[in-house]
Length: 126
Image 1 (spheres, rainbow, N blue to C red):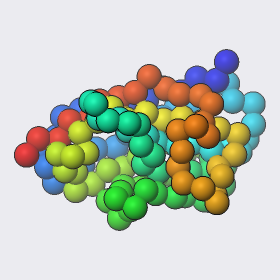
Image 2 (image 1 turned 90 degrees about the vertical axis):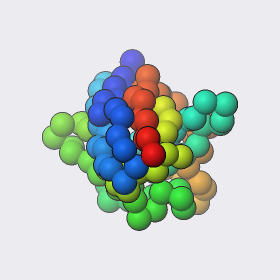
Image 3 (image 1 turned 30 degrees about the vertical axis):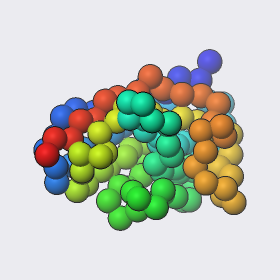
């Protein structure tokens, strides 16, 4: 069973930074898609960024482009989300997810991902 475990969330003031980590285990493929999503209370889960693990492709939602950076450490089976210039509206539960492929012709869609972590809370105060 594929497992994803997020960490790195916390509370930060506006303008601050956080780095989230997602450790992926028991995925039999060497290349696959890892996405980051977030969900604020009362709102739908939305795509933040994605990366082809084992490849070079990265993609971002428009509102995060320039502030967030997704990266990987293949030796550690870990995907990171570096978040800078955080705003109160970035407050949400952040999830990572895995899929066999990144559909590069489509947006970062919840329905494309098969395996999910339990989430890590990010709170940004003004």
